[in-house]
Length: 207
Image (cartoon, rainbow, N blue to C red; front, top):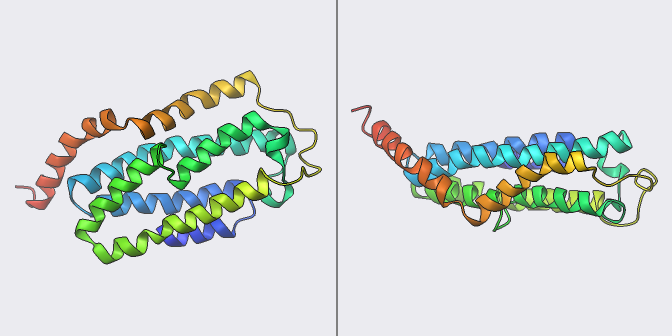
């Protein structure tokens, strides 16, 4: 699901569908981490669920903002959004780089724990699954190129940047993305004890 979802996302020309298929890929990382049945993998899987919820909320909001103005979600309809809407672009970039798993943002931490935990239990499967990160980087960067970079398309030329109401919607999510990327320790400590007990319970057959 990690690799298949990433390839499906890459094939999309609809911005919203691309994010939806990227969720399939990222939820595969959750399953892989939990299937490892060790504390590190479980922490990564659970944290990935939480982190992905934040990242996806930012990305779907970003699509909503663009659709509200341009009335299209076609990736090939845009171009040069960064020149027309720089503030919107900055916020959308944080969400997209977090989905890509950039170090310093919350997606990196949970993916790292999931893969490290899974590597202990399923070495070859994990090595194959890690290639999904490369595919994810490819479709995220390609999306950035098509939507935000280059010359401004006709659809983009009259678009307004973010309103104060839209800023308020994005702000708490962006803060969480950065905070959990730089300092994830409180979230990890919160999960660690209960998940260690869960792993021990499952491994010992409920004894």
